[in-house]
Image (cartoon, rainbow, N blue to C red; front, side, top):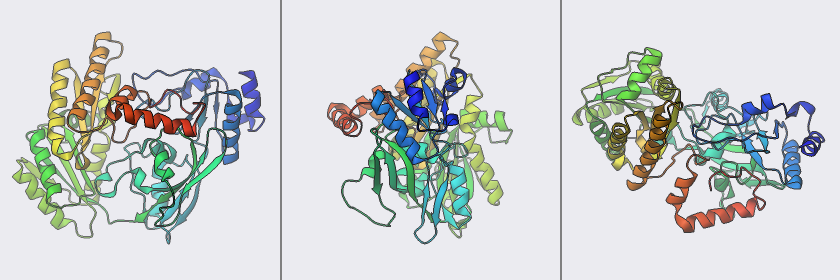
Length: 455
């Protein structure tokens, strides 16, 4: 360890290398439950590409594993340290290097916070659509690592669709540039997309070229109450089948609604079994909202309430963003699932999750990006209660199994990390797993980058 620290400090400022166990321990894990975390040998906070290259050359020379980190808001254990590793925190590389209204791109370092970028481009009349619920804390590098989504992905898509090019420091310290800053480009294999969602296992993103859109008009939303999740999902299917393009289509079950009320006192309707939120950002959203309101009524909605103005619309969206914090407040620990199914099977996923909650006598609140079938069941439990913790883990696994049975995937935007690595093998199958491990070996032959994650 002394040799490692000495070599790191030879190419880094003294304040960039942290070794005090009391401090390094605070970098050991992200926000996932049930994921082991080791004790890092050092935490490094570089500010330049050259400093990142120095870290990777040192790690390669001494055969020390490296765990890349952003803001550690992840929910799969992908940023958890391993024993004796270098934790490479990229939060100090937080500059927005360029915003071009002509080319509609932003060039950023990985530590830029999502909300900071969104506000900066908005000042130029532009829009960066990916908006994870943790957008006030999470970083662009972390968003790229997990291929994150957000509330508006039903219309605008997820992070992968906005990453045009990357600068990546490879395991041996070489710098690789991928992709482009042009509107089109198909030269060679798409290595940019390969890095998106790779959870720091192939290289360290140190710069990203991101696509932007013109800023849309302010959203106008409506809320619809339903007597069952199945009725709400019927409405979702009808909205999509009839060609509507909402900017947001979100669902909260009764447990989530009540939890949000308990936390925020927003006065959401606790009598509802499912609350559907729809929003449009067209120049005149009135006709779209009216049409969706009629669809909800046809599907059995007991009440449809359009927001009166942008402020009321934002309040509804804040209610949805508070779903996870509200459920976390119910118990001392949560396990957050991230199963995505075809929209046509969304009702089966929600009803099946409710049955699993009943079977295990657990509180499981569910919210969903209903427009794209991405559900987030949140298992609430007390880790000090061994039996309840066991039932929580079993329910989590049963929810993932249900998602696969319905033709879905074990993760729509949170990633695999440590939490779902066994389930990744089941989803990919032996041939897919072999090929993915082969890709990993090409980029990281010594297995130093984020070892133990994904596979």
